Length: 570
Image (cartoon, rainbow, N blue to C red; front, top):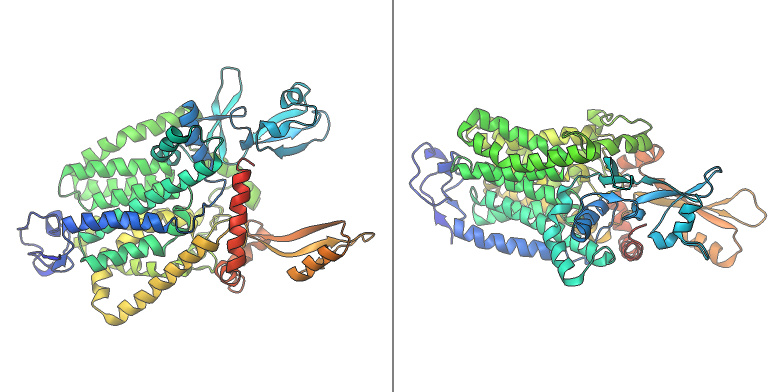
């Protein structure tokens, strides 16, 4: 099943004699060994990888609820239901916070599951509006005000995270819409359909990683690389579990990188690369770093491929620019940067978006016990060795853009005001770069396979990395460690000072056996600056918490999903 290739590293300067794409020298890249995975076998195994990972990503039978995914899902549902890319208070009232009470008096603010929640025993929401008891809706952070108004003067809003990720789910959600009708009133279908779309995109990204590796390595080494990527990184525990920006971005970036290594074979691969990377920008604007890195490389090393690359990327770029201009006033204005100003102020006290010292963000996302890449996916340390090979050996010049785009995206994440990613699992802010790190393992994979000691160490690192992702996939609940309850303030009758209880069993016994006026949890919210030290604690780390409390965390996650799907618009 493994076919011989005529050229090796030592004779890579000679003309290629094989017409099979497995002969790497026709692309001007070094053949790592005399046997590589043949193209037909790569195609068959790629299909198997896709369906295997798609199944693994659904083994937990969970969806990972979160507000960052909500506007992506409802954008797709809104397109299917109303043919609309924007939101309004009448269409999606649950995406806003409302003032309730007389306008001339101090009023409360609340959100609502639906318009029906605004009704009282004898008053409808329309009467509340007419009487001035309800109004001044404020969009939640995942919506950005548009410069446009509706025909009746009502404000309209757009997805803070842009249109790309939501639109990628249209094929899956469109089929569900045809089969089941409107998804706006079917939250389980909407959220699990969104998860299926995200999981399929991540599985597809793994296929592109495998196809890239298969052009350099034999089947065993290629499978090892894709195993490290698909099961040993947070693309499993995060990207595949809900329709965030990450899954679609992982897919288009890995597609672009695969075509990058083939650009010297034919101009069409440069065009496909331009199409893929421009789609990545529509999903996550920071992927423009990848577009620029590749463009610079082509300008220097392969100018004939530059024109098809640019032309193929222009349609999506033009559509994205038109979207931004129409809704936000300028082609280069993105909702995430606009909304980030207020979120930064709430989390840090300053609206500055790039306020994190580089050393702090880098140390936190690479090595901190609760967010570090090398803690959650230590197998990715092998990519550092691959990077050293790429920088040292000119024959790996086509991999230079991969190094540059990875470094650029890391610096952006390191400097961003909430480098820790808010309430999340692991290194979510840099999970988009996992396809690049997987590809950067290729230059050293064969070298490792030929050294038993290094192979054994790598296997241990891979085992740890997969174990962490199993833990995250099954036990990570959004609230759990991120908003840890460290104790309770219990107010007993006729006592003005609360009793502080730290033991859960003691607290439950008091609640069950004594009259209590009220009890309030003491939370260690990771977004609170006073609690941010927890990110660096080993004894209070996210992984140790999940290991110690696996069963309870699993139950909590199930309960949170059940409650969320009952009240998905809250």
